[in-house]
Image (cartoon, rainbow, N blue to C red; front, side):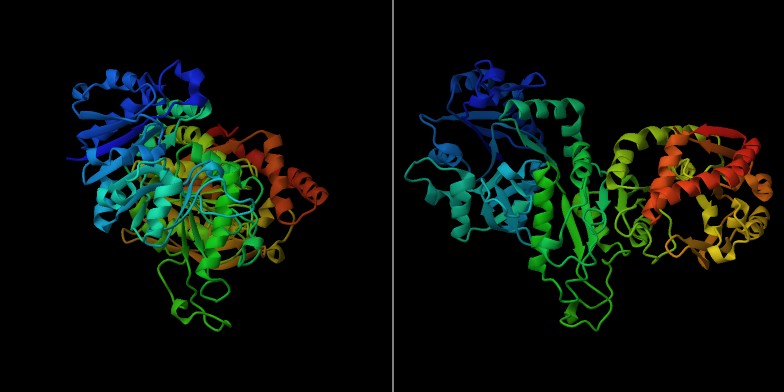
Length: 633
């Protein structure tokens, strides 16, 4: 027998207007009482015995559910004569319960794999197991601390002291108990609360309490606002998505320079300052039910500049600051290692090459296993080329944000799939724009076949690189091999340019030489070429920085402002697309870009106007060679 005890004695004073005289567990959600949703979940997860602990208008509940035969499950009742609190109620009927049982609160909507939680409880030999998770209101929630193995080390009941920092890990009021650990609490019968009395008491008695962090949906509906929220979540499909056993996409976030202000190694909570707008961006991902995972290198530990305990305090501050704005991180993975030696106070055992320091993907592999992540549907957002290389190594999509290092760290000659000025813009793209734009890209590539050659041209900052990445995504969905050839790799260093024209900024001769190789018969073993890389930080060209391998059936996608101006590109590419967007949008992107590079507003505007004279005319004239024009408004 697998048993669930449901604490259904609440009156629901705050929900009185919405209940219409019903007890709180009978609050309707999508046409059914919340208690009925819970019973259906228990049944689906293999639980066959339910004990309902009722008090306020218990007869209404018993009349509706009876003995449970209608739902194919056994239901019995313990009627509470006076309010005894969450734990007091259950303890008063402990003799009616099995040796092991789960506990639901009757005012929560949930969709969780109960069998997986029970399995984890049994595997660890725990006395009690709590479902713990982050939520969007940790300030008024009971918070839990767990160690690296998941064992509970402390409870922090609300209200929390002003200025205190805690991990956003909430006691979700879903438990597995061994009956024997509760027996000493069952006499005398008195008013007790699980979060404030029993669980902290068990911890003081050295009970083994495990914090289970599984996927799923659980949210209380004890206020009109929260009732409306869970109803919306159910009707919108979020409850089903969060509770699905299928692998899901996630957003991996770098920490320093992406979430918080880059200060060259944070070693104390006082140094941790969120970048303005970060909570709103994270909250948007939370609302979209996308797991948000922080992946961060923290060599300060290996260097002896910060202990694991100090790092925990830094992360507690991060989660508290986000939680204060209604946002949360689902998990944090960090690498404590550093390969270089010679730092005062360094920890020798951590000075090593490892598989978890970005751009290695050991941390991501751990996350995939623990959270059931689908990398093909995921994103990695960061401010450095190390983050971009990590995404590439992991096989997930990359976004560079122009905060922190702004991609100017110079470590790797890698370009991101997408680039945005802020985390907010990146998240808006993921949640709002990408679904629509990828559909447009799918239509554009519907007739493209292996071996086709595509060129994308257009004015600077019109969105052609974004379209190139979208088309690459759409083609790879069809299991086609796509090789990208961004012509920005052939931007010449300032000292190499012979004039102010756009044709002077690019190495046309070198581009045509590469294209001549690609226009011939490609080897079935792969034709290898070496390409340069233009370093935006130094404004110089790094020669032979990239090796590219092309096979006969590869689709080659060439993009750049000058793409349609080069005769060899036009001759090679049967599909030639000219991209455009509203001029005001393009100008704003251009000015933002150069201002981030340190150009004053007037100087950046002068450059934009100069380009309009010497670049725009050439690029716009090249549109005559396009086989297709695409408006990227």
